[in-house]
Image (tube, rainbow, N blue to C red; front, top):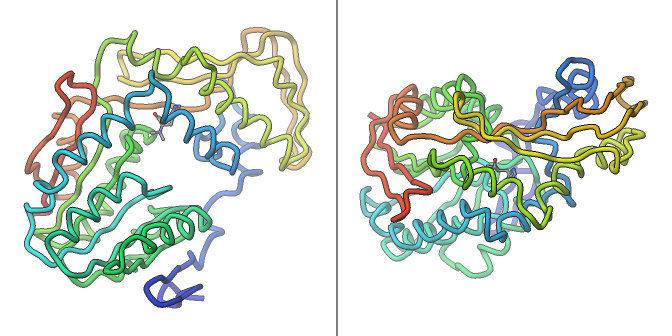
Length: 334
Ligand code: AVI
């Protein structure tokens, strides 16, 4: 199978699958590596099985987790202005599109200016792509969707985004925050090599602020974020035959001001021995031992501008809310 062969095509929808999924390390390999090192570490990309995606969706509705709400408001307020920066016709690309709920605002802003639009969502989950694409297509007759089921780094490496017109690429949801800075720089370099001079790139990111506000967004009193993190252990039990006792762990998130990141951990509250036969690994926990599950980086706009510049992008405009909680920065590829 090649990138140019749609795995599913129907009218205005086509889905391309990564022909080399083996490039993506498997869950078992990553669990073996992460539980074989100290401090124990599990990669946040494995949060998002069906239950984890539903729990993340619940997080985005928590009053303490302001990120999604503020970003949606910014897109609703400035979407038309952002789109009007570019000549028509525009094509839309989205890295890590997920449910693409907020993308709808940009799609509508573009379709208010041009008759048709091709949207190229890239997401690791084919199910999320199919579901979100069909929801968008059902409400927009002028929309076509060319979806890519892939890790977006792999897709950008393959340079097979079949765009023809001026492109606006989206990277929303503070997803950049889950990349270590070196990996983010590498991603923007790849993106810059894929886009053409004059193309646009819109990124949404959480701004640095008081640690108490940041910590509350992750240590939510309802415990949804704790459940989201513990589901990672439950997933290891379900898929790899693990013997994690979830009740032996508590969750906490702490702001590391020096790094500018919320660090999330599961902490053993009592001695615990775990076997994960599907990954060929065992691990021993003493009270206080932690598993690092996620880093969520926070930024100053200047830091984002510097990172994204690695891809040959220049800042065109930055939009943020009145309380300076969250920002969208629009770049143009030079
Ligand atoms: C998806 N990502 C940007 C979220 C974040 O804020 O780092 C994931 C998340 N983790 C806990 N709450 C939300």
